[in-house]
Image 1 (cartoon, rainbow, N blue to C red):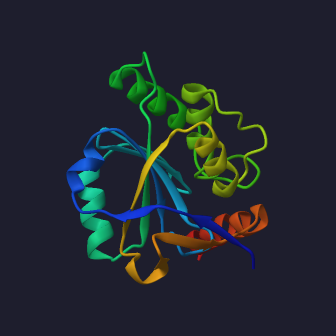
Image 2 (tube, rainbow, N blue to C red; image 1 turned 90 degrees about the horizontal axis):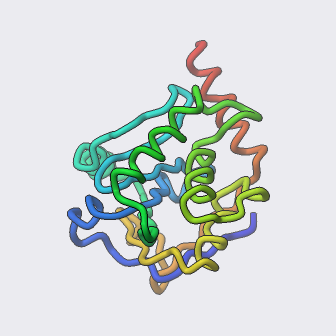
Length: 184
């Protein structure tokens, strides 16, 4: 399995940082596939097989991640110019709620994040299917400010994480398995 390298990862020393700004969360960062979440000023947004989750609480999310020792990356994105935090929150609410749930061939947890980056940062996401496609585009646009980690001390080498690359097929398999578990 090939690897995707994420550099310059720092430990999350102060949780308060996460309440200010835009963060792309890579939850279960060493699992194939990870779960992707976006937060804006402490409000957490995600899409799962259960449907959209809007305006989640960052403190509650962090308590869960810490209690369960979930390996997570927090990618801080630059704030766009001439857009208010209120506008950003309205935009991500609208984008995330446009999808009824994660479903094969329809949407993944990356879909609302991809739409947000396209809309807010004018990132070309036409060929983005996985986080490995999106992160280099955000870096090329110089939108990534910092990357923090939680519970990844043993997985980092000189501040870098080598993530296993996965395929759309593996994402779809995970979605299918999730629906199968619900039926059982």
